[in-house]
Structure formats: structure tokens, C-alpha cells
Image (cartoon, rainbow, N blue to C red; front, top):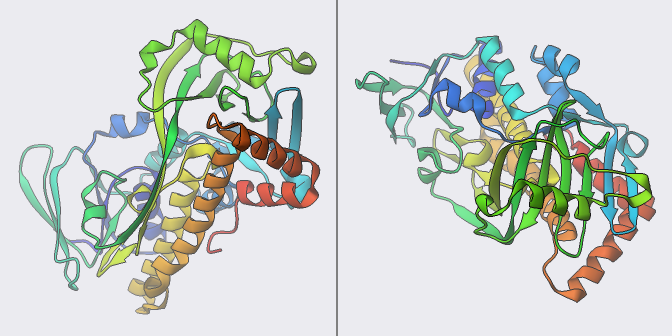
Length: 385
């Protein structure tokens, strides 16, 4: 087989890249180790920045997002005895949308613009420093295959083969806590997300739809989700989120999913080696506090697609040569913001840290400069920043 761009990974990053390349007149083939059903069912991010929504809308993927997604003007910051709303529209003129990664995946599959080979195995990248890189794999029927290309795009996450094929400098921060996350079949108890600082740990009230809530609790690393009963989860969420505060109430409901998410920051630089280009989680991981993971992947592949179309259609390498530096500028901005939100809201057990966190929360919610800084980063900087 031969194509112009071989894409490893059929998650949102890989499928969006294929979609953008098709629109630009560039051929691609996508290889995915998992089944289509498995990829479609992965529960991941749920918040889209303004820039991501504008991009998806502009490339024909925004109809269902606009009709079924939920536009939010801002977020609440909460700590015992206080709750403050930050209005992003008033502060920056931008909004965010609640629209799960699973929904973005559905829209990309429905678009039908990607040539995807699912359930492949033994994927290996070869000659990535040459002008004729290629990928070998075994297809779902067990037949060895070779895919020749001019460019390989690694969109296969932190555990795929692409990351290890790039000699790089790595930066990592592992946080001493995790999130216990639940999905519940109950209407959200809030109109917009609540980020809560509490002496016993962070809590977040998010949502997936008008009938499905997504909530999180800070827990120690290594926590077994089975050790938390449903009643215990709801009691702790109510306490940390401020149930009864100014008449607000948390409504519990049936929990349909329960999992623990470790928290870490990871950046690999550069995001290019020869004719292999990394995008999304293959190059960087951020803690979910700042709602940046999926949005960073969208920004990466938008930059990469634009550069590849220029390379193949206009025979120019200006954008492709600057891709890594351009993408990393935004990656580090979002990595810092995610670290900042995480360290402001998660408790360490140190009383000194707790007072610094409360001071910072008071400043963010009382200073227009502080509130605008948070809003600008949360609602998202322009792609290509």
C-alpha cells in the first residue's frame, strides 16, 4: 500500500488530521490497534475551547456540536463558605462548550473522510529520517502488510510506537494525587462546572448532557475505585462541593462508571524527527484540571494539517519546518496553565500551602486581572498562538 501520509492512531487527533488532509487534497491512511467500537467508547475530555469549536465548525463537523452541545459562559470557583462565578464572556468575549470526546469521535467517524484500518498489530515505523518512510503491521486477518508514505503522523497516544521513535528531551511532573471519577445518570446539579477547593481535597462537578453528570474527587495515588462505595462518593462530593451552602444542593443518582485517573504533566521535545511528526498525547500529557488535553490535540493536528497541505500542494516546507516550535509554544502555555490550576486547587496536607491556595483563589475571584488571566487560558488561546 502507498499513501502520502500514514497516520498512526484513530482517536480524535488521527481522524481529525485525516479529515483536514482530505479537505486539503492530501491522501492518508490511518492505522489503529483497537476496534472501532473500543475507540468510540473511551471516556475522555468533555470541554471544548472556543478555538476548537470554531475549527470543528469551520471544517463541517459542527452541526451536532452546535445542536446537542452546551455552551457555557464560565465556571464556578468554590471553597468552604464561598462560591464565585467567573464569566468568560464578560472577561474575554469567549465561551467553552460541554461536548464529550466520544461525541467528537462520532462526528469524525460519521464524516467518513478517513481510510482507517482497525485492529492492526505489530505496528513498526521504519526509515523515518528518509524521504520514503514506511510502516509495517499485521492486519486484522493476520496478514503482514507494508504501508509506504512520504510522511508519518504519530497520533497514537502515550503508549503507541510513535513516541519512542523520536529521540527527544522529556519533561515530566507526577502529582501526588489522582482523581476518582464517576459518571452518573442524574441531571447536573449546576448550570456550569464547579471547581472546589476543600481542606480534604479537590472536587469537580462537570457534566456530559442534561441527564448525565461527570464528577471527580481528589484521592491518593493507588486508590482502588472499588474501595469507594456509591454512598461514600456522594457524601464526600456533597461535603467538598458545598451542599447546603447558600441553598445549593447536590442531587445524587445511579453511578454507571467509576475509575481512577493519575495526574501528571509530560512534554516531549521536539515533536518531529525526520518525516515523523507527533501530535496530541504522543507528545504531551496534561492533568485534566485545565481542560486542555483534547484541545491541545486539535490545535496540534490543525497546525500539522495546514503544514502538510502546504508541503504537498504548494511544495513549500516553511510551515512543516516550524511545526514543532509553533506547536510547543502552545503546549508549554497550556502545560503551565494546567499545572497552575492543579496546584491551586489540590490540597497537599501542608497548612502553609493551604493558605497560599486560598489567597490565590481570593485574588483570582476579586481581581479583574486575575480573573481575566484564568478566563483567557481556560476558554483557549487562538490556534497558532
